[in-house]
Image 1 (cartoon, one colour):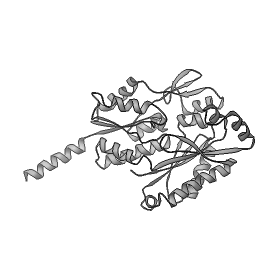
Image 2 (cartoon, rainbow, N blue to C red):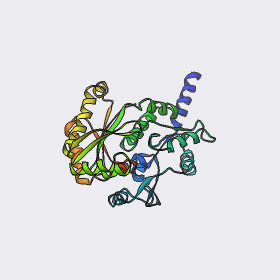
Image 3 (tube, one colour):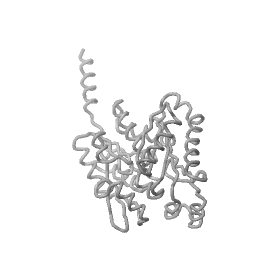
Image 4 (tube, rainbow, N blue to C red):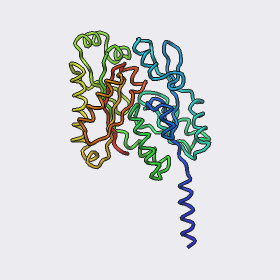
Length: 304
């Protein structure tokens, strides 16, 4: 009888153990969405024409896209260690542990900095930094996965391990509207950009664990969209057939296009995969600055 009572106490303690989930604004999750989800989002800094802005604080997504359209000089930056630990301190005020899911270490040094900070007191064994190679909608889905794992009763360390073990089982295909942004980011040459725009060439890029690489090139956006859907279908029918059959696959959409084009794109994805729900987000600023306005993406993420 005493053993049974003690077990109930331990189960009660576990239920009271609170895990907070923190991500950064490169996830595409707004402060308003974060409040609704019960998570926390660290605003990430950007430099536009050498002036510093913080996404979601003094820079909206719409304002960011307007500056991109004007071809203003845009560059991403890292938050200071103090800004990172400040949000951790806030969350630890009413949580026992934190799962922190920042932008991929392949795109920013902020993940490595966070990993280092998490080894120092008072964060050691309390803050667990996830490096699962995500950004934008992929990170948003990782946050949802983390929430699901919290509900299952896993510890913050176990959640980190589960998310990182699924690192290579996700990706996103993206196409662009204007090659000048890829040229500005050094991903293609100036001559390639000029010729490509004249010939209406739309490259299809693939992002998985931290790099953005050109997969193929299509004549026109319509063909590029069809190619991206075909690429995902092929993966679902081969490499990820079991995950799809078991219901362990998430389908994602991302866009830096206007509302009408984005809506049409999501409808096209839904028509191609009628049995799956689509999580749709604006393309995160950290990717949009390389892609430019009018970018469209389709992604997938296996349940960890």
